[in-house]
Amino acid sequence: MKQAIFFLVISLFLASPAARAGQGVVDPPAEAAATCQLSGRVADHLTGESLPGVLVRIEGTEKVAYTDFEGNFCFADLPGGEYSLSFEYVSYRKTFQRSLRLEPGQSKAIQLGLAKI
Image (cartoon, rainbow, N blue to C red; front, side, top):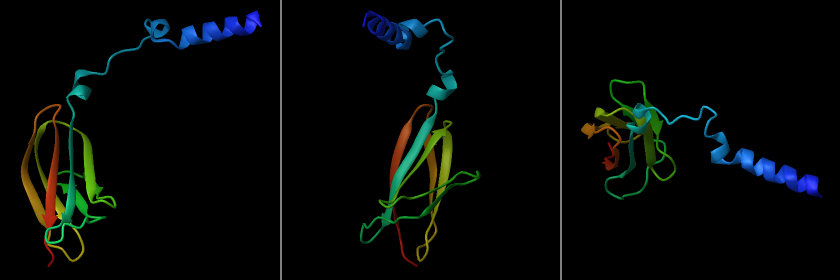
């Protein structure tokens, strides 16, 4: 019984942050803390109904996302800067959201309504 308690105490100590303090655990680089997030929701501009499966593209890059069942999309780990997005969906006009400025570490959420063709 004493052996089991001893191993339990040692295991808990080894799992504690104090025990790992000198084991090469480092803080993430400053650039990681300065990344941005750009997210939003896409809906029909007349009904407000969510549009799942909309192709959302950051213009001038290869970054794309698709909206989920509630019309939400998200781009994470973006560097600060200015972005233009395009939105494409069957039977709707291709729409652009230009000049979205993100400062380092900032998160921004947008709402967009697409118009039918």
